[in-house]
Amino acid sequence: MRIIDFHTHHFPAHFTQRLLEAAAPGQRERWKSISRKLTDEDLLLRDVREGAISARVVNMSPALIADAEGRVAHDTIVRLNDDLAALVARHPGRIHGLASVDAYDGERSAREAERAIRELGLRGLFVDSARGSLMIDTAAARPTLEVAARLGVPVFVHPVAPEPLTRQMSPYGLVGTLYARGTANSAALIALAEGGVLSDLPGLRIVLTSLAMGGVAMLACLSSRSLKQVFMDTNLCHPVLLRAAVDLLGAENVIAGSDWPINDGPIARQLADTMRAARLSEAEQDAIAAANSLRLLGIH
Image 1 (cartoon, rainbow, N blue to C red):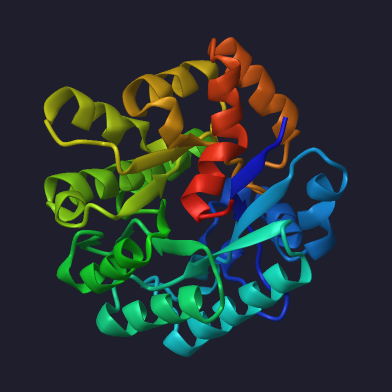
Image 2: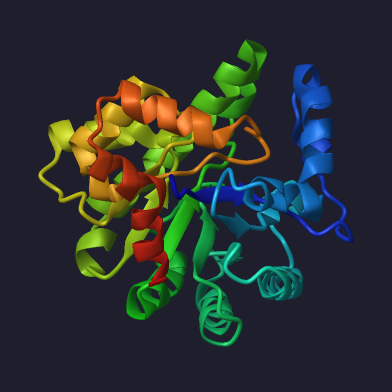
């Protein structure tokens, strides 16, 4: 089965990560290992090289080097996108890139989004679900979202660690931490839908992680808003969750995404087993594994 992994993280080794500073004490050893994998370009390509997957869609998350307020200098974000474009150029057809932008930085962010897509050839945008008290439907983020809608590229709205919920949930280990991040991802979806952004920008397509299933379920049950612009990845890879995503969004709006290297298990086997257990047809499986991502990225 052809698989495009839409949810892949990588980071240039010449940047100093702040990943361990933010990690809960009980999770620091795990994050040390993840930090090493994030900078390993050979490891990034291993599953593609060995034929387990066909390609990776890579982001370079500024959160890995952000200050305590979640901010990264604009010039640094520009350098990240230049580095990502160089990575894509080294591995054509195997690596596709999502440009990082600070969506909460107004027109300057929108200009960088346009540069990254038009000049660097990156295939979409990667943004944070929230920034402090600001939600993704804030006026400051609208210029960046307008660029994405106009250029027809997807926006991966990635989870953040919201406070104080992250601190409150950290004693409960990985489940507590992911719950906090999933809440932020769900809140971003609700803000985009109920705040009118999706209806105002019908060309906008957003991608969420499966951690946001709570937000999808709430909107499906309690709102009349259309979810046709909403895509969800498979990173939790559980048949019940996958079945729910297909039932609520349609198989055409679900895409393979592993959250590599945070989850570095055998993606091909995990995905195939999960899709079969979710009782998906062969056509649905093929769409989720690769076709939907290729369509989102504008690759023919």
